[in-house]
Image 1 (cartoon, rainbow, N blue to C red):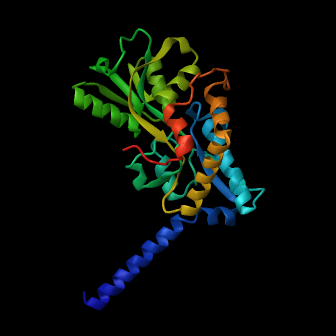
Image 2: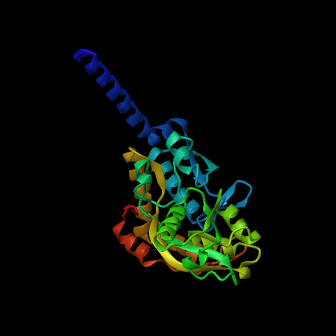
Image 3: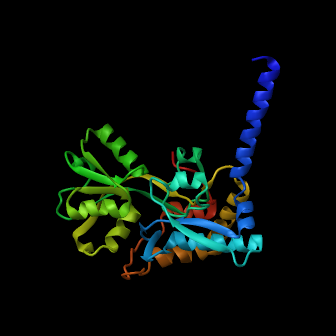
Amino acid sequence: MNTVSRAVVCIFIMGLLSISSVARGQTMKKIAESNKITVSYREAAVPFSYLLGPDKPAGFAVDLTEAIIEDLRNKLSLPKLQVIYIPVNAQNRIPLLVEGAYDLECGSTTNNSARGKEVSFAISHFYTGTRLLTKKGSGIGNYADLNNKIVTSTSGSTNEKVLRSYAANHNVNFEFLPGKDYADSFQFVESGRAAAFAMDDVLLFGLIANSKTPEVFEVVGDTLQVEPYGCMLRKNDPDFKQLVDGTISRLMTSGEFSRMYSKWFELPIPPNGVNLKMPMSEQLKANLQALSDRPAQ
């Protein structure tokens, strides 16, 4: 290939990359032109996002999503903006977002450096760490007790990676049974197929609180790797990220975020009126001032 041909090819490739970058960065334009935004929810991520009825998501993250949508309506002067909710899980939430199937995920997704290569995250709205859900009397009190046991977690979660890393470093041997979502993994423990379920502690407390027999289960073990949750959006989209961050910043600085937190973590929540009794962590209190979107490593 001669020099001129190489130059033409390079210009063509750069042009395609530029077009791709612009396309990824036009969420606001797409919403304005279609008068529609598509957002995601999780079906069993209590108290962040879960179903109260057919296609009726509720939770702390759903309230956060709706506040962002309201600011979007005002920003774009679209009072009748159509909102479509679609369910996602740990395996498909990132691919579906990147491919454009939906525009925003606020839920229980950890903001880490690996995911930051594919998507962007807004200001962190929660901090949590990996612990273990097990049945009382199982003999499991910490991670060493998982030796020669069957352990579950949702496939593709950061918790699976954290647990495998701990096991490798501490010579703990266990069999891993992947679940497709939180409810699936919980059912493995409930039915006896797995001895323990490794997941973010807040989600484990939520699953127990809303189970048919909460007195049967407990959360045990040291907290491994404190991680931030953040609303997830496509990369290279500064205008949309600015709007999402602006909503979260406004809620945090006005005190509304703290009221939303109390509603879902310190008061009885539907459908069973269970109170998780989880005061705000020191990390989250600090982020009400810092307004950081810094990822976990």
